[in-house]
Each structure stands twice: as C-alpha cells, then as structure tokens.
Image (cartoon, rainbow, N blue to C red):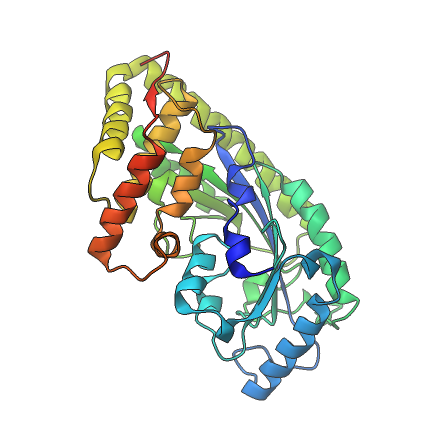
Length: 355
C-alpha cells in the first residue's frame, strides 16, 4: 500500500461515528524501549538505525501491517510528514526525526507503530467514538505481537522503562478527543479544564502538547502511569469522559433555552461564510466548520452527504490542502483553495427543521 492510497480514504477514526457525537475518537498509546540499548536521547545514531532495521523487519511479519504502509521517515517528504501529523498518525517530535525514524500504519489508520520517537517504540491504537476498552483490547494484541519479536526494557520494580519518568510503569497514555462547542459558547471550558487538571488529567488541542483547540476539539488524557494498572487508568478516564459528554449535551440544551437567537445567529453566520467565502485561514475554517457541525447535530442545518463536515475538518489543514491541489501552495494560495474546497463541498448545505 502506498501513502497516497492510504490518504485517499477518510480517517476512519474521525468519521465512523454518529453525526454530532461529542466523543470523536479514543486513543491508547504505549511507550516501549528495546532492552540493551540506551534511550533515543542517549543512543548513538548507529544504534538507533539498528533498532529501526529490526523493528521494520518485525512489522513486515505482522498481518496487521501487511496491507498497510511502512516506511523510514527520511523516505517521506516534509509535506507528507506534516500530513501524517494532521491525521494524528505521527507526533510532531517524530515528524522531525529524519535520521533514524520509521513508521508503520495499518490500512484503516487505526493502528500505528512509531520507531525512535521519544522512546524506541510508540504503539498507538485509535478507535472512533468513546471506545477506550475496545482500543485497549486491540492494543494488547498489538503489544503482544511486537513483544514476540522485540525484547522490551522492563523492571520488576518499576515496570516498563521509558525515557520520560511520567510514562514509566504501564507506559500507557489513554486519551479521548472531544468536540465541545456548547461548553465553549457558554464560556465553561476553562473551569472544566481546571477541574480535570486537579484530577491529574491533561487537556490539550488535537495536535497534542502545545496545540490549540481549533474547531473546539480537545484531547483529555491521563498524565500518570507509575503505580497504576491499565484498567484503573482506562476506567477512570472513561468515567470522566462520560461526565464531560453529559455536560456538553446539557450545554447545548441550555444554549437552546437561554440563547436561542444567539445560537442560530452563530450557526447561520458560520454556514453563510463557508458557503460564500473566497479566502479562509485554517483556524477560521475549523472554527466555522465546528459551528456547522453543531448546527447539524441540533437540526439547525441539514446536508445530504453524511460526515462531509468531519472530512472537511481534516482536508482544510495545510498539508492536506496541498496534497489535494497536487502542488505546493503559499499561505495566500492555501486560503483561496481552502475556501474553494469548502464552498464546493457545502453547496448543498441548507436550513434544518429548527432554523
């Protein structure tokens, strides 16, 4: 499978759920290191290349990646690495490792192995919606398959050894991507974030640490792994996310009750701008598409093509736009092409029964 064939399909984890669902996707990520080698930050280039060679050989033996895509990072262009980052298939740190990095992606983009990121291995499983348990079951299978071929660095006292102490133990980071426009419009996101931080949970944008929550998209994940079991981490996060989902749905109901005209104005303006704009920045497009997605969920808007908005929320990002255009675009050209793409895809967007 080529990279082009991979990206010709929409992100399954982003569109395979009910339209308007609050929980977009669930992710389980494991940090693992190879026994007998220094961590990537201390290893010699020749050691990292040896690890890469051995892991790529392992991936070639796994059925999961047989129909997927496997490549060394330096064989992928900078634009395509950014594209993988935009699809949450590659971290920003890994994207910049041209010397010894590699990546394996399953055909449906739901299983990923990153080689020589912060740790020797980052295993990732993503599933649509709130499906942490399903993602964890798949991760156990992937992890066990890798461990048949790779000797992990493990301590009977501390658990799996990782470069960052916060990952030591299970090495597990569980996260859920949420769409929270209701809470954002009521100015209630920041209090929620503060409450989650007190519980030891991190709240970030869709691009991970340091990223903005464009499109009202937020990632909620655990921060501590040492001394806790995988089941405890996943169970607590699931419970918290369940409560967040309820709060978001309640926020949407309150908007309908106390700010009906303001809600309709924001949704209607977003639809009008997207259908008529000739220039759109990435952030503006994402924020407006998020309002349209809210409008569709609340029957204020209607459209024939299911998940067209979710697909656009991926396609309007810079690397995806340039891939669709088939050439490099400067910022101004991207803004114009982005607007053209959105106008054409939302031409059939119309008023819903409640607008």
